[in-house]
Length: 371
Image (cartoon, rainbow, N blue to C red; front, side, top):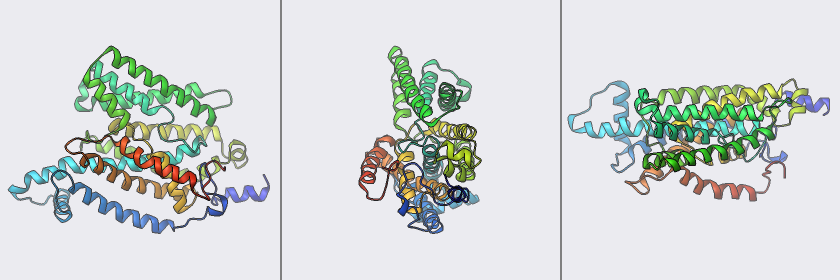
């Protein structure tokens, strides 16, 4: 690497992350501030509209009035109490949870693809979701953590997710540290192991509740959203996204490999360990309340890079907003398309994500891994 090239990298120019546009297309096609402004407006409108839509449709104006009354402590007429309860107690926490999970998945997907330098990486590639499923099913079958009441299964899922993350890291660790390839391979292999363990638990405990729990955590749903569980998820996701943004320059450097990172003063092993902890905590918190939602953390980072360029400083601002908007509308489809039944979120995101990803593969000028 020439001194001039090293100086360019240290200054933080547009750099091609894993699965980013070709060099000539690295410059953003849309200004970052413009994209953020549009997404913020779109998110605000989406929240109000989707909260009002459902089996009982409520106009956006009325929905906004109920929300304003709830926030400011305003009065609601006696005949409107039922509608108000639907809006504030049932739909609002669910839609807010959808926005938080969408934002978190998009941000973590960006970080994971840089962390392991793999264009097919997503927040669940390290086995966290499979570990969460094992924890949730184990609590459902064994009846543990009963003191937590309705949050017992979610707590079990979070414990399982963190245990999976620790096991994956320890298994992938070697004298040379944790390399991207070892981390990905270990995560994939351990995922299969956790899935087998979950299947064994369900096989020897033919309980319909355990089977339903397994399906929930493998396909995703926001049906269990409550105001009580929202603050913890919100705090984890917001802090996680802010920390990842703080490391955006480092993520740029990591995409060039360990040798280039070391030459620029970045310890790749130390940073990889730090990022692994951050992404695991955020992913575990999200999986514990929503299950595993596929394709969001895989496809959205690529789409955002096309719009605003490859720099993580820009991508980690736009991707969470795009993820929030996307997931809010996915949740609406989930709960209204075949109402009163609810479609798993993973079904919808897969149906949308597969054709988009295939279109990206055929798009001229977009290179996955440089080829």
